[in-house]
Every structure is written in C-alpha cells, then in structure tokens.
Image 1 (cartoon, rainbow, N blue to C red):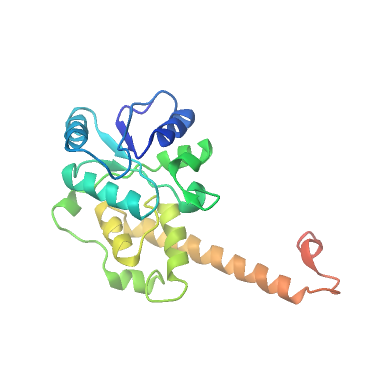
Image 2 (cartoon, rainbow, N blue to C red):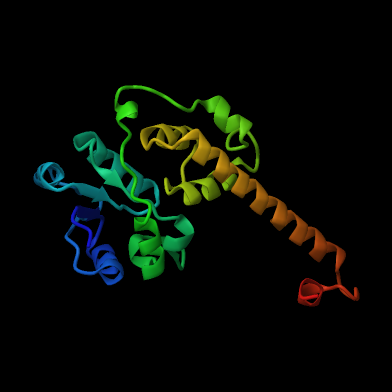
Length: 211
C-alpha cells in the first residue's frame, strides 16, 4: 500500500488511481485552481509522510506539477505517457488503464540530493550525442526514453532538467538509449520489409513476417 499522499488534478483522476491502486490517500487540485490552503496542506503532508505528484501529461499538468514542486521541492513524481492517457483526443489520468497506472507507479521519481546542491551529471551535449536533441527524430526518441526511464515526455531542456533532478545514472541512460536505438532499428526493418512486400509480392504483409 502506498503511504504517501497522491496529488492529481480532478475527481475522475482520483477514481482511476484508486481503481488501479486501491484505497490510497488522494487530493485533487481541481485543475489549475490550486488554492493556497491546498498547497499548505500538501506541504504539511510532505513533511509527515511524503507526497507523490501525478498530474496529466500535458502543458496544464506540467504547470501544476511545477507550481507544487516550487512549494514542495521534496515531493516525489510519477509520470504517465501521453499515449496511455489519451482518449478521443483528450488527455488525462482518468483515461489510463489500471495497468498503465500501476506501471507508472512502479517508477516513482525522487529528487536527487546532488541536484538540489546544483550538481549536474548531464549536459545538453549528452542529449545531442544520444540523438535526443537537434534532430528531426529527437522528439520521438525522447518520448520513448522518457517512458523507459519513468521521467515522462518533455522538450529537450525539460528532459535534461529531469535527468539531473531525478538522479538518472549514466549507466542507466546508456542502457535506455541502447534500447531506444534498437527499437528504432527494428521499426525501420519492419517498414522496409513491408515496402518491399507490396501488392502482388509473395512476401506481402503478415504472411512474410509469419514465415
């Protein structure tokens, strides 16, 4: 059972989390209308037993997360991939399956003490070298790397900040980049095979891949 207070945006989000995790303690912010009283309550709970922020994976959710983080820097974080939270064009925790929510909570992120002291393990050069910045494919690679690392989707600057804030090691980073690149190569091989196995080809479609 999760002991920390979980902070989400809305009542429907809270219900989805409870369906996935059981009778956990949840507070919802009512969107961006987060009152000073609620912020003070969250700060108090962070001191008593900890707080986990679990907002929607969109721009509003990120602003709410950042507002709470500034008030409660010791708060922990859980990130949900956008694809898992999307339903009929809408993005929200309430749309995620129980399995996706449980998978997200398996990667609770804690702020690294070294990050609070201003130490930076990664720089923008690391992202550029790994193909996570400066290329047309960088956004897709960051999205997949963020999913594997459990730090969510973000632009290059935010991604770099999260790598350092949550204490991702260089070993873990290299391993994840290897998985991302391997996945990209498998997808490229798949697309090439489909292109070569067009209409009329004896190797077309699923029959080719089932051989």
